[in-house]
Length: 428
Image 1 (cartoon, rainbow, N blue to C red):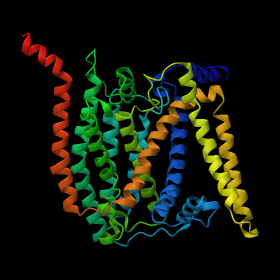
Image 2 (cartoon, helix red, strand yellow; image 1 turned 90 degrees about the horizontal axis):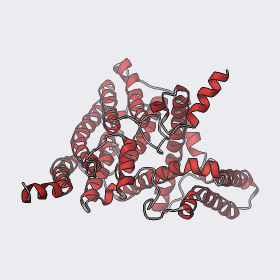
Image 3 (spheres, rainbow, N blue to C red; image 1 turned 180 degrees about the vertical axis):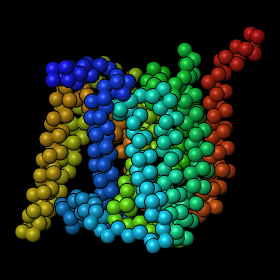
Image 4 (cartoon, rainbow, N blue to C red; image 1 turned 120 degrees about the vertical axis):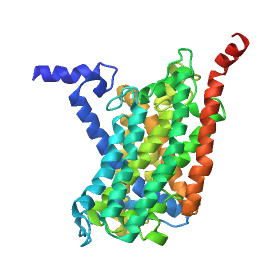
């Protein structure tokens, strides 16, 4: 027992990820934390998307289940769990059953190498970015399997659209990623890295987020990736595989109940995954704003207080909404629930002011804040842009993003190596 306690405590003094340190216990703890955190994030995203879209369209959104509809995702989850699970009579039973699990596993496995901080990751691979891109691409296999196994025309068309869309935008996305990776090697040592943690550390060493590197090349590469990741996750305005106007619901038309909820979970998990890649490659990952300019103990203290103040601000919004709730007896439970939720947020905010908690949570906070900004953009796009036609979707992928990706890659290499090229030309 004493040896086990020492085994647990030994990792707390290390500066490595659990996988790199070879600590199976803490790797398991991190996996559980990522799984639970991702599930809670999907629940929150479900509520936020419905609320934000409602306010964009001058509606109220969910209001009935819990205060301001806060318990609506829980009610939906319970409904899906107890709903009758129907399988078409002529469907391929085994493939139909396996397909949603493949999509979910692909979305969740990506987070094995997502760095929430310099040590806050399950593990760090020297080919981390290739692992993320490769595993995330496997989700299309589950989508194609679901469409084919359903033995129905609409799901099959949706699955074929998804596979064509994935192939089209993977190419442009890969070129944008290579441009970012190339920026890690354009330093004094001339050494690059494919490690997710190494890419963030390269931005810290160079004193610049890669979105601003070789301006505007880094910004263009980021734009290409941002468009491609929307198409990769089948989100509006590129949600052709799920276009209800002509395909009913696309590749998961024949799915219901729990199995349908797995596709729903996988879609939002994939959105968070690709947003994590974008944040890591171009927006400094876990780095706080201006880490190389606003330095010193005072600035470190100021930025470390942001997590606590954020939760206190959310608690204040809850208390403000509680004060505005109708004073009718029928609203008493909802008012108490909203006040209790605000009190819980306030308590979390106060805990985050503790020095030991503050220092450990700061990296995770800034990473999650950047990912949250991307998730808001997903909702904004859905409420703003009309859906593309499929021929327009293919045109954007092959005729616009692909040439842009090639051009950015060539220009990035040229600009980065220009001092060496100039020296070779003038001093052969």
